[in-house]
Image 1 (tube, rainbow, N blue to C red):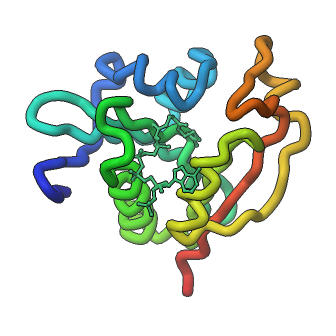
Image 2 (cartoon, rainbow, N blue to C red):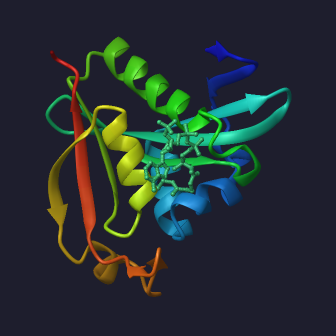
Length: 157
Ligand code: ACO
């Protein structure tokens, strides 16, 4: 897919996945490796450089989840995140999924705004997810990240 010079394509060789970018979205390398090995990794490129990344992960009940999405800090706020979310939706529709899921921390205010602007609706909370699964405390926006807020977009309508 190309839009204003940005291309998004599947990365088949996961050993060349952009780990630093992936860690912007998730501090756990173990989690990232698990998603890389079992999911679909896509990269956004400007020229030959990787400026964004996203991992989609098959879930039960015709659902697919965006497990990781990140844009290089120098490229944030320019619409690349929205392009990746739109790409995820197109990929899900092409592969006959009926729901696109995404989860983020209770402290990720900008991400929660972005996902809702893109049509995702809050569908649940995984209480204490980050306290249980992450060894180090995470703080953002002066808020401790404790719970995973789950959002979903119904693609069947
Ligand atoms: N309040 C309201 N809107 C906000 C806020 C806020 N606090 N913060 C951001 N936004 C909105 C912007 O206004 C913009 O929408 P607009 O165009 O309507 O104004 C939108 O969010 C940002 O859109 P993009 O420019 O397309 O996003 P970007 O390219 O910066 O990518 C991303 C977003 C991926 C979240 C990026 O900032 C990033 O990599 N962050 C660090 C990693 C991260 O947190 N990843 C997500 C973790 S959750 C997960 O991976 C499943």
